[in-house]
Image (cartoon, rainbow, N blue to C red; front, side, top):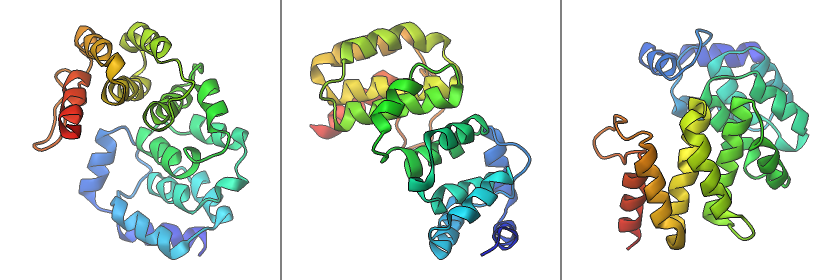
Length: 221
């Protein structure tokens, strides 16, 4: 499939409701508004095509970039390539798809986690904390959770919104997965009050850390 064919296929699936959703969440005007299911279906048809993925990414189109994250070959991306992509994208949903499809299974993810957690770039820092949440949840051995709590308590209030979201996830995952630190995680969440009044659809769990932690712990028990 050529990039022109892929863009035509995406445009045919665009809809106004999805465009409005994307725009509300920070996407720019270069988009068709394609539902995630349709993007995944097209990616399954293409399979892996790294050159096509690079061309799709270069268009700057929101839907093309979503698709690119699914048809890239992660093994052909250097750290510099990934960092350039992250610095070129401000729509957090695309950045999170890069994390899910490209970054979180890399063999060097621990090195990236440590580097990006210190970055002044919003998207690099966002994914540094996403990788940290993964460590907290799945492989916490050797990670200094009290030091993380210190950073979260100090830095979350002034963090950029794109970083604050994944920092909050890390705080919640500490409280959910590590009972010995749960009281402190709850106390930090209560004191900071971040996402306390966040609007939540019926049936969904609030991102306010104390509510999130208590609800997940209740489900565990």
